[in-house]
Length: 148
Image (cartoon, rainbow, N blue to C red; front, side, top):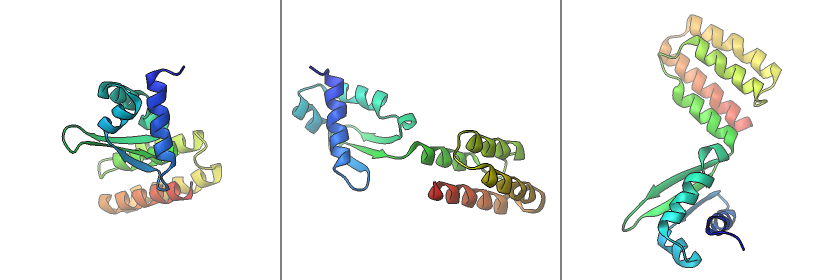
């Protein structure tokens, strides 16, 4: 027989699969009643099996009217989002260069795409004002994310 954590995970995954948009909103008490478990066990499952590294974004609010919102996001999208969040007007060229190398090394972009991106990024650092450069870099990463 499966353990409680497996049952909770399975139930949440079934609820998530039933949604077309890859997002589900649940209540801890409903899950606890359905599976006959403690809400703390649900919290444990959320924190260990529905992590960003596994492609999940979890928003949780406890108390009256509380909810758990779980969204399944492909891991590569999280990488692009994280990179965009780290690029601001103070971001050095070397950081952006290492981001492109990371994308290539992890086969998220091709050698050709990396070869095109590097001169664009170099030029952006040489010729653009910082806020324009940030906008360009965000747009490039967003475009790559959408094409993935």
